[in-house]
Image 1: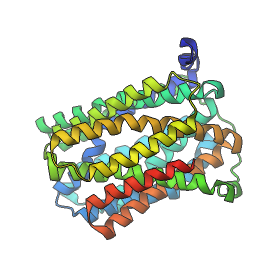
Image 2: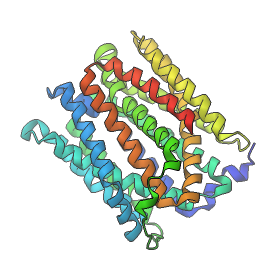
Image 3: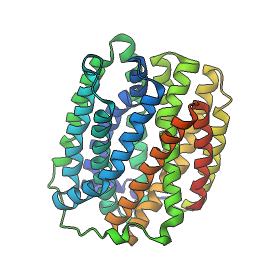
Amino acid sequence: MQSHDSFLHFLKNRELDELYASLAIRSFAMGMIGIFIPIYLLKLDYSLDSVLLFYAVAFATNALFIIPAAGFSAKYGFKHSIFLSVPFLIALYLLLYSLGTFYWPLPLLAAAFGINRALFWMGYHIDFSKFSDKENRWSEVGFARMLFFGSHFLGPLAGGIFLTIFDFKMLFILVTVLLCISITPLFLSKDVHEPIHISTDKIFTYSMLKEGLVFIGRGIETGVSLVVWPIFIFFSILGSFTALGFVSTLSLFFSAVSIALIGVFSNIKKGLVLKVGALATSFIWLLKTFITTPLQVYVVDSFHGIVRAFVTVPLDALSYDKANKAGIIEYIIFREILVETGRVIVFVVMLLAADLATGLLIGSGASLLFLLF
């Protein structure tokens, strides 16, 4: 077990402290709105195919803008990359706010969403790879994920209650204000960066084939979790914004607790933890296809929250280790392009299948790809 001082190593790392603070505020804001966006679009009478196409275009745009986003980060600094992501997200919410009046083309909204994700996650992952400490990376990744889920888990319930009392337009305004606040911690110190040459030849190599499949699987599984699952349980089982928010909050709460428990151990083999998480996640997605009652949703999704920690912490820690060996920028680009490609794949397949339950089975199969890492 790691010592108390080692686990709290992050307190001595100013760059990560600022990243943690920004991430906490952003995570809460995104938690309030994220799972409700597909519901919002469907309630505006967009078809399920239109919603799935929206997310396919969003994640495809993300994949296409990853290399330009990395170039921006390398030239101007990772904090500036995260900062620049916010206007695109605010633009998305403004367009969503007025969508019922002007009926903007959904690909325009999807593009804003995708560019925002490319800028934010490239800045975040590269910043974390650069400033996290190798000897303490397990606990630092664990703390970052615990902070993410810990600050995120109240968001869905708060958003669900807010939507029950007010409406989507008021929620878009509130989230926009929180996002503006989230970027202030990043500039409490100077943005540390230096010119970085990006070697496109190093991004895709045969030796990364297995890792590539893992990241595609990760994209598929998270795509199902972020979009398909909320739609499935809202319209077929729950039918309530508050109930949907509570389910997500419960799952994220157990994720935070689980991460807190495994994050203090340094002698655990990351690969073994990931394999356990892969098998458990695959089983839970399969189990979700048989769910018919709200109680079953609450119980199974809580267990999903627990096993999620067994995937996210070791996968991130191993990825950051490999990034520092293989070349930070190139490896992170490689990872993010394939994760987003996985998400595009699942929504394209869903467009062809036209059955939400099929998406849950796809999530189950994709989780087994984590065994290759």
